[in-house]
Length: 199
Image (cartoon, rainbow, N blue to C red; front, side, top):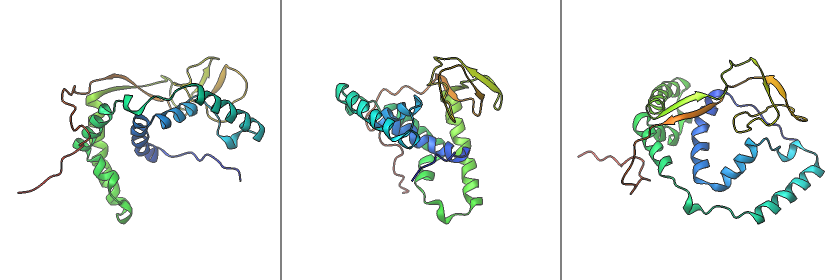
């Protein structure tokens, strides 16, 4: 059975981006697989069976030759700090952990406005974010051969070598500058929000 990649609308992408961000930081295996996607590697169902077998063999060879980074070398303090800020200003973790199936669309929408405002405050105070492409959405764009695949992701049927001509469907985002508060005491950074006890 042939699988098909279904495009996802903006709102699910917005909330899903947080989960992928922290999973990328905490899992070296997940980060490695994400890099393959960013480099425009095709899924197995997108290429003929013969090509799939060849790619699998080459990939296994590379894994055996390159030692994977040890988990203890990965710093998660920054991820914990950002989660703390998102919880403090937007109650993001409370919202994500809540089962919203029992709530109406209007109730979820009202809560989303508060979360959106808090998340926007955290981003604006701690990050300077700019678009990757300066061109407007839906405008025509040309990418020369050797373009930065981290900055531009080609969608649709990609064949041959550049230049590639297409329509800009999203300008992308990049962090230009960050201003996260410096933390001198990293003990118990995994405590994202203390338990609250009323006396």
